[in-house]
Image (cartoon, rainbow, N blue to C red; front, side, top):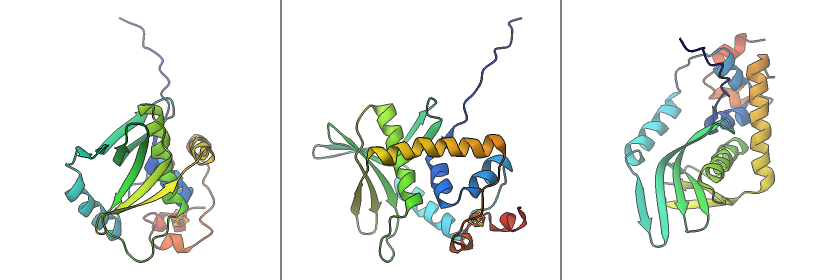
Length: 198
Ligand code: SF4
């Protein structure tokens, strides 16, 4: 009989975890330390259903000189990071990372947690596809227009620092402080658990 191999697996977090961390680090604790299962909110379910229906079956489109790749799953064991990317646009030199949203409501605000989710996808695309990513975008399907944002090296470095902090929460089982902005708690799926947490 062969000796068992002592393999140390690096935990893999997702771009969605990065988004959650920037929304409120406490969510990481509930997800990965308590492994709490909570039901998604009505708002989340609606967004997911519309999104899935229209785009989940799309694969590749050629748009002039640009190639569009939909629903691309990328994983880097070295970084401990994975993501399902809605849309990658390749122009022969660079890649742009795009998130597809079903509906534009009101004035668009690109909040930090949302931005960092896309930066995490950009970091992953650079690593796995070996192309530069300088732009991230949000495509609102109902207006069929991409709003673009430039990203820089310091944004990308922040992803590695964040992965380190997420790992520390999980390894040391430290519950982070609650969100300072309590408005965030209103739509949070962990709010009932959070009320009882120390
Ligand atoms: S309820 Fe508020 S403090 Fe608790 S995890 Fe959610 S956002 Fe964070």
